[in-house]
Image (cartoon, rainbow, N blue to C red; front, side):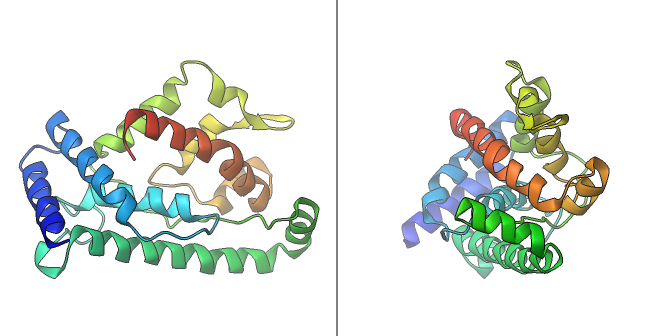
Length: 216
């Protein structure tokens, strides 16, 4: 384990030696993500993938420059320890927000839980400040969503609402995220409806793209 941690520190040091947004840094950050992905904290909560996505974005922003948080300091622990601490905080935030939203949408929540047999979840994400330059991985996701070369993201929409589709929601949920509350007001749809659609339709497509590109 110590040898693995040392290898990660070396890769981080090498990545940070390249300019922000450069192909060299992107390649090394992707390599680090691949090495650490199977060693991070795991749990079966429905909002885990959203929290994990936030963790990777946080990693890209703060491992070298500290753009939205405290820059990674190897003297305080390994990369795994640093990422797990952030991931667990995000999971805790999701859990707290889920319960808060559930308390304010009881009737709809009950209908969703009983009809489907499993509870739907809400996954509000803290609004993060915009960064001077988006990390390479985030840029790739944004270009993919905007291009939508096969039109799949635009076609996949909430029934009767072609304006509320995967392309729109994925772009709005990329940092700096538009909150679920704001989206609910903008589209005139409930938070559980939007969140459930995002989890069932948007996240799987986002994960598939990330896997194909070797980003996560």
